[in-house]
Length: 407
Image (cartoon, rainbow, N blue to C red; front, top):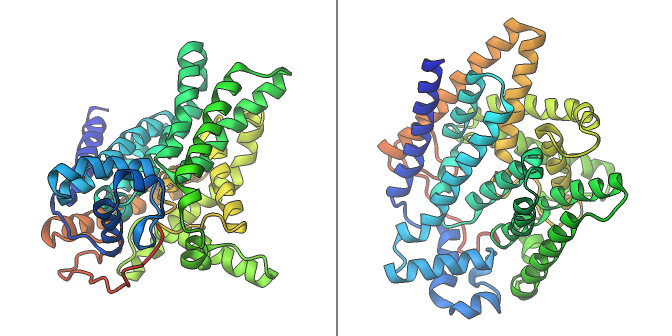
């Protein structure tokens, strides 16, 4: 056990070294980051809440205002612009680490989970990019942790109600949090129905949630350019035009969901990801109903929570409100997919031990290979991109237009 604990600490340290090393490389701003910087430097603080952002961008306004106020005294130095992304991702890492410790039964599974962060290029790269995706990972982790901590919160009703008031504030910092906050609302509503009374906790939560939605509408959505989502992400919605279009768009989305969680270049490196994350997705689909029934149709366990988030993303994509499985915009879902993968391998190990152990070893080898490739880009090439090539000495040159995307 001591050796395993030491290895856990080593792998935790390795992820932190990768993220901090990438941050201090001070990689030049790429197109989307420069677009965000335009709003930071050219808009007055009040304008961030009263008019569309420049260069066809979307960004949680309160979060952007905080970055603006913090970076102004430093003349928008790269380290000041990206500091909150780094802090959010490190915070997210430890929140999800806490979640994994509660869920995973074996120390080696915990090591695989941490190692998956080291081997996920998006989870390393977005720790140092002027975009809100690391905050999305933190927000989703806090919501999952809130759902898992139900029994502990019930022991102190006053603290529980304070948390219920504060949790919806995540919607001011993260767009995905706005729809992920439906999960606690579902639990509270079901508890009220089961007890046949209106719960005070539901009042606290619902009042805070409605207030946040109103603030986001008034100071963000109302003054944003509304065609951007459709214009930039129409290929990532689920089409209902015909059965063929539905299955084609769903298949494309599922391929993105399972193949783009670790690395993308060289292209073959996505094949093992399809196998392992696909296994985890299959485990989620197969196991969620039994656990959901066991939990009396409440979201108390990680598998039903994962399925609920998956279903919400599908529904939003069908209604063309949020694209499905764009790697950066679904980054908040990556830790859950990793957990499902590890639990899926664990399930196989319980059924066919030899096969399960073989899968664990192969998965660990894959993670080591990708993690060292990311380290190569961070410390040798000193240029980690969102789709950087592993073990390459050449940097990827972005030739996208300046109005690249809304997110």
